[in-house]
Amino acid sequence: MTGTVVQRKEEVLAAAEKLFAERGFQATSVRDIADALNIQAGSLYAHIESKDDLLWEIVGTAAERFFARVGPIVNSELLPIEKLRGVVAAHVDVITENLAAASVYSTEWRHLSEKRRDDFADRRNEYEEIVRSLVRDCIREGTFASVDEKFATLLILSSINWIYQWYSTDGPMTPEEIARKLTDMLFNGLRRGVS
Image (tube, rainbow, N blue to C red; front, side, top):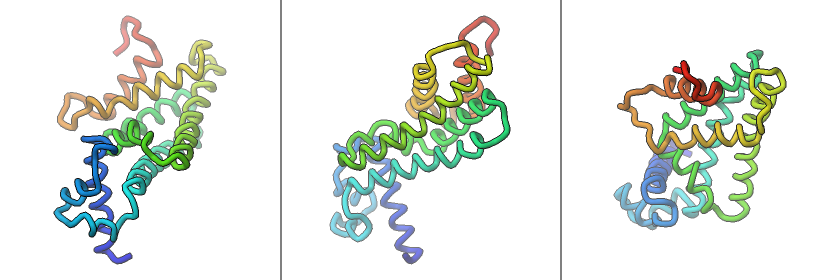
């Protein structure tokens, strides 16, 4: 691929990502994406085969970002609680770096074709298991109480994944502060004295 073709493909993906996040996958047409780029709808097919392909690439790229960021943390020599804090911070970073991608990743994947939807669900489950194994390790070593590890994992991931709904780059908290406050509250509970 030449540089111009690659650049145009990135522009197409960025436009689709923005529109899918704002309007939803089903409410966005190929013409809408073409209009956002000021090109003819037919010209778009020089860069894509289908709208489903765009969604697949967007959610797949987002998933790879999550795995790439947490992999080194999980494979480090840190204590389980430090790994879990690091994973939460990395997850927050990925979301806040691209809110549109986080939105599409969190909600629009359900509109993938059946085979791709199943494959994506497998990837999400694989990621969830990474977090769950860290929660399990924290329970085993006594850092966490003996809680339902599946529920605790869903609580952590649900809390983080919703950030795209309210985070603002010009808001009062940095991603680092969000990750710290989130882990403090989730890991310590809302006891008196938690900052």
